[in-house]
Image 1 (spheres, rainbow, N blue to C red):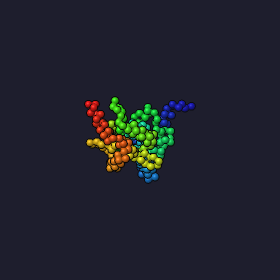
Image 2: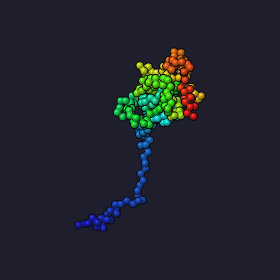
Image 3: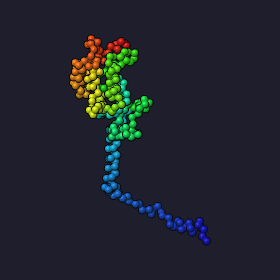
Image 4: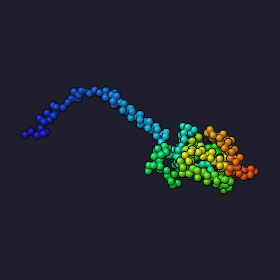
Length: 257
């Protein structure tokens, strides 16, 4: 009987081993990697992934606040979303919903607009209507201007909880996106700032510098003139009692210094 560890067994194992110098290198067959049937699908898949990623970043990625709007966005692109709150007669907050219903917003459970202040914190773009100035509300102990409440009430009834499109021009000193805003009313697209001017609930924005109108300044000024002639809203009182929002802010600013 032979034991597994006997000398003859060891010798047999040693005889069947291969010496290092006897190993023959195997050449790599690169033809597999050059075969179009293998290369083309990889190239197509990689290119498709890149295109999808670029499309998502450009058109479907949500912008939470005005400070997150890139420099390539201003004056070239628009924000589509739902108005979550209105601050006064010329500014509001927008929850950006890129792609709208086509991207599932309002239809899919994970694509819903938050409702509570806690959920909306740091997730809305503060919008300032371009080219118009509404009467000032009471704040910091200062009295409200005439028609400030009417301007606020109109803007709330016109856009609150509605979907709007904002063509953004720049970010102002209060980190608001200055924009011309449109809303669908009775299937028609309405310029929100223009409607404020028609109602006599805002004036054309006047400033020494930094005014933004897009290409609408002439149209806005003609609309303001029409509202003034028709004595709409804040134009309905005595001229001697009239004070524009700009004049009001200048007077209040002087009184606090």
